Length: 122
Image 1 (cartoon, rainbow, N blue to C red):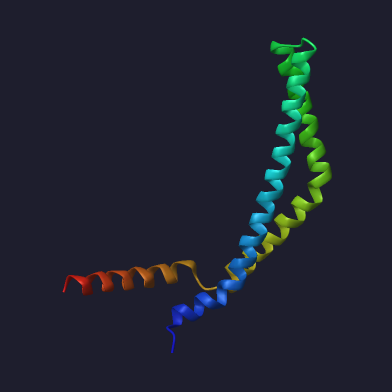
Image 2: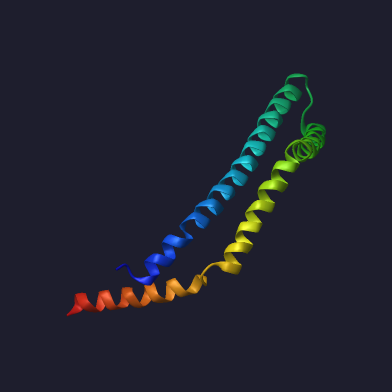
């Protein structure tokens, strides 16, 4: 029969998988938005260079474009960010309420590691 810690780990596996999936989706969406903003900023900087706008004026224009892009990204992807964050936090709350304590397995695992290393010294 498998030990209780293995059973507890297996029962938490779907919840951990769901949390990891939603977290990766959230960070992937953020990465996609950042990549788009960087691409547009690079294009705008090159375009401003070709028409002769340099220095502080270029920096001010690019700052305004950056603020506009951030606002546009939140307006376009705002609901997706909100939905992913809400589902992620709900699953995290459910795991905290109904899951096993996070320290329990670590403490038991540490004792198993000490016991196994002691066995090697014999």
